[in-house]
Image (cartoon, rainbow, N blue to C red; front, top):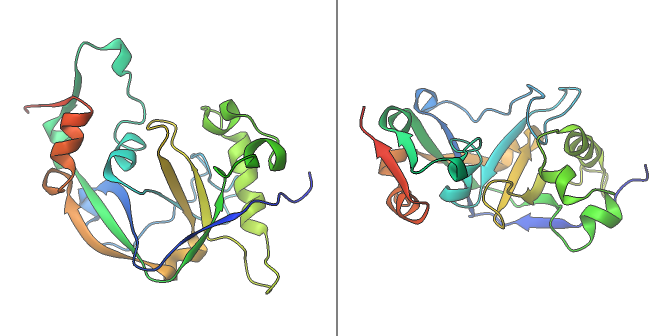
Length: 200
């Protein structure tokens, strides 16, 4: 497969990304996982990845609610214990991030040879192959071309997500660890997505 010519989306310094995590990890360094179990993980487990959203709703839909089956239920619910066990890591961008933009017009089909089903499906063989290819790309200056990937949210379409490669660790920092229940956008998420918090 020829090297794909994917355009970059630059996330400027000063922007915030959001990552939903377990409250037990409050105050810990950002974790770039190498399990190989997620959509844009390295299939060889040589580099780590961190999955983020540009807004709380997308970060939640891609983590806490990623296996939701709301169409099969009369009510959309989340347990109070689950809410209290979660926090949101507000991640500040310290230096501009260069992210491969898979949402740019024509990129999926013409450059990657993929359809939407392969990008958003439950089998990650295609997206992990793309991740590895993009992670290896070198720019004209001899430095790695991409710090991660911008891709379409499977669970909150048409919102976008960003996965960061571990090489970007020095370019980002945790600004705050916020209990999910205290996040300024949590009430509006419950209202907009019609989610009810069940008592313990």
